[in-house]
Amino acid sequence: MAAWVASLAPGPAIPDEEYLRADGNPTHGGELFRINCAMCHNAVGAAGALTEGKWAPQLKGVSEKHIYEAMVTGPQNMPVFNDANLTPEDKKDIITYLKYVENNPSVGGYELGSIGPVAEGLFVWIFGMGFIIAITVWLGAKSN
Image (cartoon, rainbow, N blue to C red; front, side, top):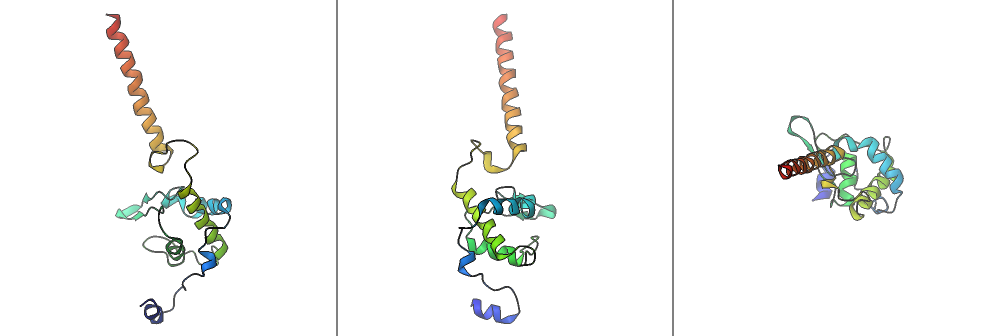
């Protein structure tokens, strides 16, 4: 079926197996991901909201083949990253970074869904201030 669909019009080919192995450079891949992809997918691929009800999906649990093909075809609002923008080796490095992030725990502790520092700061602000207010009320009631 895939061969028949591919015969209907020109388009990118299915990537070679050598580019689908997550054995590239995760440091370089992380840099490329933060430059090209993080504004929509979040810095660790945890998903993100776009304009007009569109969204960038979560990349955790997505196969290497689907990630590569999405970079080449650009589904929905995603731009196309052809070989002039990102070489196949760059795409392999991005896949390696995403698989590294998926398989390794956060070194910063509990990550609150990996949605970024705003959510983490809000969590600390609400619960931290709530704790301080509760102690203040308790101390005020105890002094009476």
